[in-house]
Image 1 (tube, helix red, strand yellow):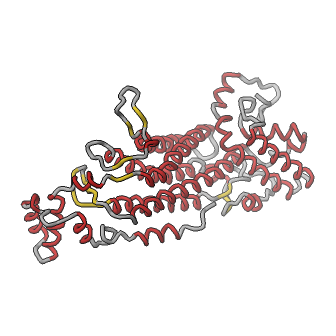
Image 2: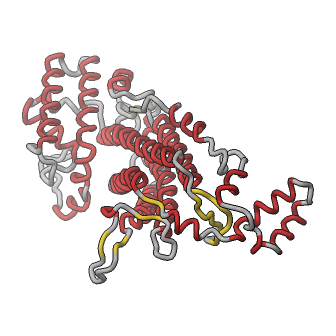
Image 3: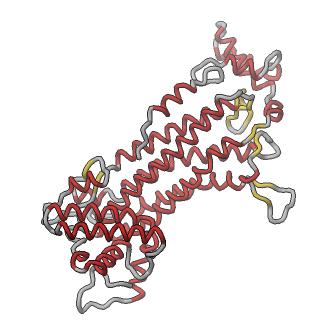
Length: 434
């Protein structure tokens, strides 16, 4: 391992203890490394503005930071166990190339605000991906909802209930993912605050140009209080996990539907073959493994959020416990986004089996229509309800799924899906948060 940033003369270190302290930090920092370099460039510019580094040193430092980013991206520089973390790797590289100028790069900065700003930039990027994924899912659902509405049984308590349609099914998930896209954007606006320059949580005795770093890094505002900058660590990450979790809840329920609909007992849906896998022992099987793992993925996201929340039983100020939040955040976000990324193509290409769906619509599923019609004609609803229940098996006489859906004129129902309103909500989100 390279020299520790905090090493003091005469103080020995223990290899086992250092391994425990480092954990997976240096490996996880690979995900945040380029953002750390970007923030370092803005910090160097700010130091030049207040005379801590010269104009020439600023240019040299920025050049070497760009070179480091290029070498890292190309695999020529590897962040590994030689370094305690990504922050020390940046300083070691700059010191190796530039000597004293490299040693000045950490002036007025702590690893606390360094990881805060790198993580914050990473979170903004991931929320942009989340918004894009949710938009894409919503767009596919709206496109398919606008196609011919095939009859589909509607279920409550997993029992056949009323006539529904494929258009209503797609419209329901379309609106859900429109909301999820909005939530991603609103969360991005909420966390769009620059913590760089708050140091270890109490500021420094330098007039750091925090307004410049805020503008240079593309933040909407400065996170003013150094103490709140530390208090927000974990809190902002949880907000992102909640936005992602909202989308994953809808994905889980969608996947549950498809898990049922693809069974031989339902036979409503056929999935594209690449979204299924074969059995290791049963030659006759094709399993909807992708759908099942999308369904399971909410658990990973929820567990990651829960782990971060449990780490936050802390007093104010920085505590080392928060190091463990990095792994939870990375694994939860990357796994959740990977699951959502698969859904647009899956939803675009899945096929409905009209014959099986139509055959599953039984006469009793029209009983609600009969009761409502009688109530509209003046019969008290509870009386109409009882009469329809008693004659439920005859309720479908002279009726078709299409006639039932055509009569469903309440807003959002079968004959009034309001797809244009949903498309407008989606269109109002432009431009993107990137």
